[in-house]
Amino acid sequence: MKLSGAQILWECVAREGVTDIFGYPGGAILPAYDALLGYPMIRHVLVRHEQGATHMADGYARASGRVGVAIATSGPGATNMVTGIATAMMDSSPIVCITGQVGSRLVGSDAFQETDITGITLPITKHNYLVTSPADVAASVREAFAVARSGRPGPVLVDITKDAQQGSCEFDWDAAEPHLTEAYDDALPGDGDDRDAIALINAAERPLILAGHGVIQSGAERELLALAERAQIPIAVTLLGLGGVPASHPLNLGMMGMHGEAWVNQAIQQADLLIALGMRFDDRVTGNLKTYAPTARKIHVDIDRAELNKNVRVDVAIASDLRVALNAWGSQVAPGDRRAWLAHIAELKGDASVRDIQNLPDDGHLYAAHVINDLWRLTQGNALVVTDVGQHQMWEAQYYKHERSRSLITSGGLGTMGFALPAAIGAKIARPDAEVWVVVGDGGFQMTMAELATVVQEQLDINVAIVNNGYLGMVRQWQEFFYEKRYAATPLVNPDFVKLAEAYGLFATGVRTRGEVAAAVEAARRSGRAAIIDFHVEREDSVYPMVPAGADLHKMIRRPSPIVETAAD
Ligand SMILES: Cc1cc2nc3c(=O)[nH]c(=O)nc-3n(C[C@H](O)[C@H](O)[C@H](O)COP(=O)(O)OP(=O)(O)OC[C@H]3O[C@@H](n4cnc5c(N)ncnc54)[C@H](O)[C@@H]3O)c2cc1C
Ligand SMILES: Cc1ncc(C[n+]2csc(CCOP(=O)(O)OP(=O)(O)O)c2C)c(N)n1
Image (cartoon, rainbow, N blue to C red):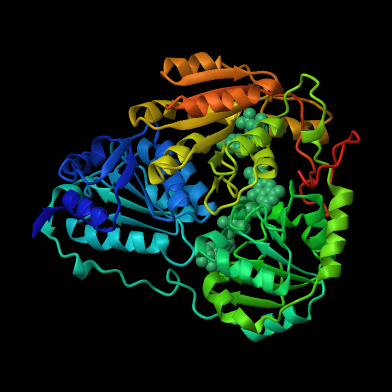
């Protein structure tokens, strides 16, 4: 069957099972857009900025586990994608980005809207392709999907010249089947021996599981809980691991790291064994590496061999898909009695719990923690929450109790402000039945709020909670703690977000006191359309506890005023 390169592109995308793509047209990608009209089974979501398209594809992928697809034209369209691609790369999110390129004979001539996007994205993609002939489209596109979803997932870019889209050739799906090299395929059995890992676990008195994003990505939630319950090992989770273990599970201690629970960080420092599963020892998680978990032996299971012994030297390093590894350990892990260790952690919890906000008398002030806590109660923990980056992101992690995998989507590794709204659009399209809440700061919201028009055009029912403190809050907090309150470039003058939302035809309301929170959330939920709530929160509140960057993990800054204990809350 003879098809144009553009038709081959969509033929392959459709056969990969893709039903939704996110993009923005332009000259060099016009042949592909023209051919798209012949593929009505693929829904195209017109974004307002190509960065939005990449975050949407990313949110789609994180919400569903399927590959997200974004498309843009050459030059500025392609460069606008760079932040979204880097975001997906840092958090191992599988997306395929398709860009148009100038005609192959013009490549290298500084032609109109020519950029070397494969060169630019080389370090922030798992792999990328420059396709200059229609005969190469099928193999490149099929391989791009295979690379994006294989092994450790990640972003792949396919740059297709205009003449490669316009020219024709025979389309042969089978002949284009990808044959991945080991580097992009699932990990081979690792060097570390399962028997060594099991022996360490069985001998440990104070073991701790560190559960990361890889638990969710490998679908190993049940296997992980089975291990923890059988051996009675407590679990700490990373930011991107939240939801992989139900928050209410008695062995789940909560989040580790810079803004993690104080008792979790102390338990890490006192453990005699860390079992790190699908997490990469980010510096937000370890603090000072020289003093990190000094008394612990360490086991690390990761699908990416390059992560093993990268930041933290371990005793047993296993390169494997996590689910495969945990199944192999299975019943060889001995049933454990770790009551003494668990009781000790419960004591740490009692001593260290400083998050009192819930029990503070209502003095007329509205704290972000109130907002998140009420949102959690009112949605009964069932919402799919997509956060932006900053203080509100950390408060969400602390106060919204995630019970299910893929119920929190957030930019962890790159920490990309502007991520939340577009990622939520992708998530809602991937899971139309989910109740989606965006939790976003007044700063980050203004980076990509143009995508509200996409929400309206696609008739998406998404709720946006703006945690409005009139500052670039997280940076203000660093200035308060480390720069003597010299607030350089952090106070914000904002538009009236309620009026803005109304201009888009959305439901909108503002909240200034704690007593108004519940009614506003319920009104947004009942409105049956996209909604924005502008929460005017305490302007100079800070996120506690905090491990200053590079400090020892147990040396946390605590909330200064004495506050009532609510560990059980
Ligand atoms: C303002 C701010 C503050 C932050 N504070 C904190 C904090 O206090 N605590 C915290 O935890 N984080 C914090 N972060 C996030 C932090 O920067 C990292 O993004 C996060 O810790 C990474 O979590 P992870 O290692 O689980 O996930 P990833 O970075 O996604 O790594 C996942 C790992 O799992 C592996 N993997 C993937 N699939 C599989 C599989 N099938 N089988 C086995 N392995 C697999 C991957 O190879 C990778 O090594 C913060 C971020 C921001 C922006
Ligand atoms: C694109 C981008 N630029 C700058 C930063 C640095 N940064 C991290 S948090 C933050 C402040 C965020 O402010 P806001 O969105 O209002 O959220 P808040 O911290 O107040 O909750 C900034 C500027 C970033 N993470 N991303």
